[in-house]
Structures are given as structure tokens and as C-alpha cells.
Amino acid sequence: MIPILISEPAVEPLTLDDARAWLRLDTQAEDTLLTALIRAARHAVEQATRRALIAQDWRLRLDRWPANGILPVPLAPVMSLLSVRVMRLDGVASEVPLAAFRLDDSFGTRIVFNEPPPAPGRLHGGIEIDLRAGYGTTNGAVPPPLLQAMRMLIAHWYEHRGDALHEGSVAHLPAGVAALVVPYRRARLA
Image (cartoon, rainbow, N blue to C red; front, side, top):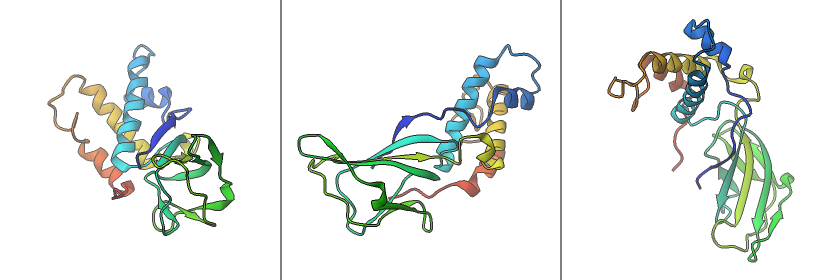
């Protein structure tokens, strides 16, 4: 199961004003660059932690329901289930009531079945689960160390533009950034 992004966050965890203040810039001359760096930093921190920082909608597609009634979710934190559908053989989707499921964070994020869901008619990709992942809808909900990691990464990229061979600029996070994100890193699901 590979998560599919349905909708990007409505806002970024850091604003242009935040980035300008961190970089001590007095003008808006580089706002286009800063906007790109903010988004790239969010993606890098999300990739490093395997967590969604700010509310965004994702779709999971499955071929079949797990036999044990527990579905590990490769995203975290999960704010809510939005919809669950099973596809009939003719391709028509049938909504499954959300009351049939509950989110459980006791052993990593997972969806637990309250009742057996209906089997899909389609053999491949016959189940679609839409969910909202992220710490919240505002930057105040994002853990401060992850916001700081974004600030430091933005500053690093701003200062080292074009230095593709500079240690930490492409393949690795700078040491200070990595130290901030390590406590939030989720183990990869099998």
C-alpha cells in the first residue's frame, strides 16, 4: 500500500515572515525563493520523520482487508478518517460507514475494524481509504523541534545555494537538523 497525496496542506508550517525573520531579511525581494525553500524544507522534514507536519489528505488503496482486522497506516499522525469505499466489480464505489472503523495509536497508527467491512468486488485496488494526516491545521500544532528543523534547513539551503557537493545539501540533512528530527522518526512499515 502506497499512500497517494490527495491534497497538499492549505498552509505551510512556517510563514514567509517566519523565514524572513530567521534569515534576518528586511525585504521581500527573495519571497519566491523563500516560498520554495519553505515547501522543500517541509517535504524534507516529512520525509526524514515519515510524518505529515500540517493537515493534508491522503488515500490508501488496498486489494483486500487484513485478516486480523487491523490495518497499519504508513502515515502519522492521523487526524481523522474521511471516507472508506469498496469498489464493486463494475467499478462503482460503495461507501462503508466510518463507524465500522476506529483509529488506534497505541502501537503506531493503525485502523482497527469495529465490525467486518464488506469485501471489494474488484481484485486489485478495490478498497480506498481517505484520511487526513498532520499535527493540525496551523503551525502552532507542529512540534517546535520540527519547526526549528525547517528553519535550520531553510537557512542552510539559503546560504549554500548551488553547492550540490556540499556535505548535507543533497543526500543528507545537516547534523543539527538531523538531531532535531531523530526523536520524531517513525520506523518504516514492512
